[in-house]
Image (cartoon, rainbow, N blue to C red; front, side):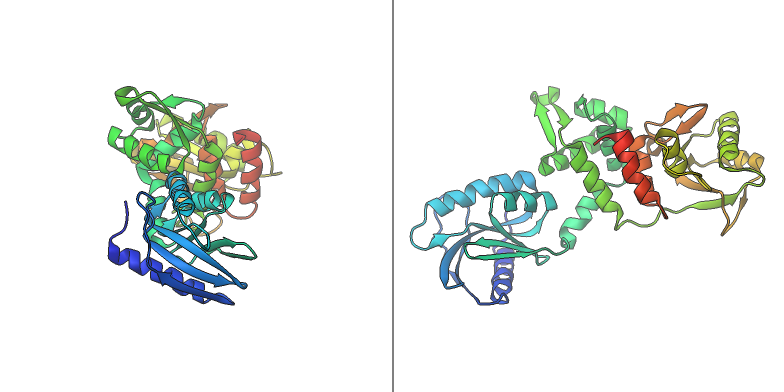
Length: 358
């Protein structure tokens, strides 16, 4: 969807100002001379390094890889239709996703976003400024990797070789079909999916699981720290405590999943010892009774057991049982490790390579 003319003017004016701040650059907004079907809304006359260029400019509200492919075609069509100075097609948007920026750079198509990022590959003068994404992009992307939408992503990553219709994906992810459909729409924009079929029988496959997992990992850097309930269970080392949790939580029918270092060590050993366990638990009366039987007491320091409270069964999806213990899914363990302390990030990369494989 294109911006209103007012917002277009603001974006383009900001872009021209950014150009004028560059060394030995002159930039002027010119009449568009808009070509039918080219999609361009402005033209900038650029003078740099003793050369003159024309920038046919197209504006968008937000740009993801799928949008970038369309914009590249439109901008090149506009460039071929112009006469005179050498054209340099350029896309100006309120927000451009990292994947879309990478695609535009690979095709040597310039861009500018409201966060101040700029890429301009002019012959003899190359400009590249990379700044954090604007808030207009950060918020919707962050929402994709949280709550029930995250359950859909989790399902697609765990079963990344499968094909899913909306109804089946919703069932396995424990969400509504509307939520599954919304996530499919968002992921299509990132160009991570492959589709087959039409109508109600349409299915999608996650073609780029590594890219999606990278994007999810990137979101964790700005996420809030996980709220933990910290406890000390007397007289138990990590192995003994793990066995006790399996027995006591099982006896009380408590839904749980061991995560972080303790779980990763079971799948792909990395550390010489584990001093603390972190467990995702669906809290309630059975969990309270189990904690009481363990003799766990709340502490502010010196904890050997930390509880991550799960708010719904969907947060314990794809647990795997090993030696009488429920372990979180490898995807969940990896993401949890990225939010840990000490050597947990180092362990996360080892775990991803050895257990996840993409």
